[in-house]
Figure (cartoon, rainbow, N blue to C red):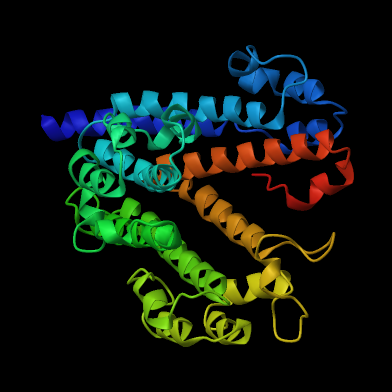
Length: 366
């Protein structure tokens, strides 16, 4: 009976998620948005999809306020699903929040180091990464207290133990801390989806393995590129790579030894998708691009490496919906909604800066 109840519950949740997926903005919606002249015009166009969430915004709101309100819709829908999930689906949705928690804890650590106002820090935290005892972290008066609170009071405690000590919690190490936590999280999530009795050998394990392997590779490539010209040693860099993915182990070993962009190019040539990303971002052999093109194109026609990674993430997310009875549709819907929010924010920023000609270059429509 318990298994039957779980199946009925998951069928109910999956039906809702597929309904949410059908409410995502269409190509025609984006076409209408690109014709807008003001942020109020954007609000009007978003009315059918986001009306209740945008109604409290003042006339001609800031782009950050618009982003916050569109994010509220995602959070509201996610929390509704989470409140109704049971069994392994409930735990799966917890895992989806851990990445946001890591970012929030990193923000709180940085704020504590700089003695920032507690309320300001909490307001800046991503709502999907909040947890019951998060305000306790803000009570800490020094880094050692904060570290002890993290180990006791947060779901991230297992990712700290054995990897980080309170001596590591300083401003110079904040990105190392974030990447260490994310490495431990991804490895744990990967093992869980492939070994849990409800998921081993199922479409959920298949789709989520692809998702997590891609994320592991993306982080390994980005960590390597961002480490050039910094004090991060090759040995420290290697410790930050997740121990799975298409690049693991030979590719990540080569990444750990790379001295420059050319060393990374040699590694990405091992995987056709990643080679294609570098080619399109102008980072290929003789392409003339540089590490600076990771987050911003070299010209109107060139997308950045970050854009290419997002595009691949959207392709994987869309494909997840071709499978039936899989937890992965929840993950995929969250990623698709997040990309929609990025699209809306990008369009609003271009309009606010009177640079509408830039809009079409970085919009992912699904």
